[in-house]
Image 1 (cartoon, rainbow, N blue to C red):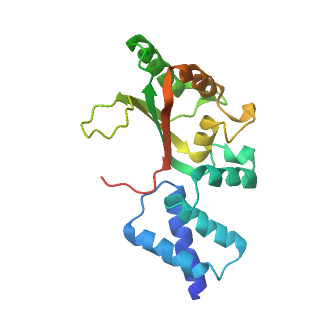
Image 2 (spheres, rainbow, N blue to C red; image 1 turned 180 degrees about the horizontal axis):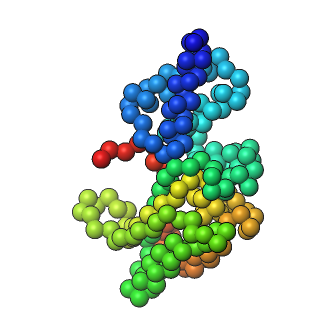
Image 3 (tube, rainbow, N blue to C red; image 1 turned 120 degrees about the vertical axis):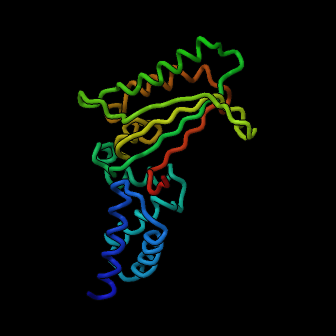
Length: 207
């Protein structure tokens, strides 16, 4: 096998692991980086996109919102929100900082409504893998005043894209109406800049 073909195969193997949500070792990460460097000047545009997209999954070189907006334009909204689009575990972390006037009863109602999103249906089927929540209870004093965390897990980036919807996906037929309604419901209870969202695809883990 020619060096180019060998490197292309190595890159494709690691790319497949990433897309399936399989953990990759440090050695496999090194293979990915080496393959990208070698192939960058020796491949057609389709191969280059495959390698660069796989590496960007682990170490993106541009803001995620910008990258996703470009991705949406490139693949189209139908594919972007498809359950089969980029399969693998995706975590969606949401952190809330409430207004000081929010009562315990109101917080309990917010929690109930957020957890109820787990039952949102897509084509008559539940599409969210799980939702969990908890109150900040650490002593590091690095919580920036945030009160509560929610962790939403999806089986693909497509499901995550369908759930998140706006501002990326504007057409209401391509995002979850229940989540959109929840965003409008919870907004009055949040302090200024009182929400932090952080998403990631699980590409490596240690057990």
